Length: 160
Image: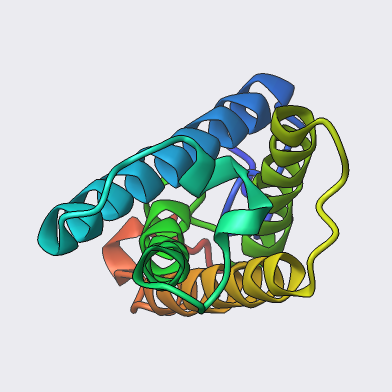
C-alpha cells in the first residue's frame, strides 16, 4: 500500500542534484553571456575578449563597447531566468540559484582581475541583473507550478 504525504513534490536533500543544477545554471550563465557578447559585438564590429565578461572596468557607458557589455549582461539575465525555469523548476529556489550564479561570477572576476571589483557600475549592473534573473525566473516557475493539476493524477479516495 502506498502512503501519500500530501506534498506535491519530493523535497528530500539531494546534494548531487543541487551541485548538478549549480553547474548547469553557471554553464547557461556563461554560455549565454558569451553568445550575447559575440552577437552584439558582431553587429557593431568591435573586438571580442574575455575582458568583457570578467574585467569590471569594461562596464561603463563612455563608449559603444561598454554599452554592449551592459546590454549583454541584461539580456543574459533574461536568458538566465529561462535557464532557472528549465533547470531548477522551483519558484522558491530561484533566489538561491541566482545569488549563487552571481556570487560565483564575483569570485571569478576577483580571480581574473587579481583584486576585488570596486566600481559602482559593476556592482549596480550585477545587482540589477541578479534581481531581473531572480524575479523573471520566479515568474516563469510560478506560472508552471500554478497550472491546473489534473485530477486523474491524484490517488483514489477511500470512503469510510
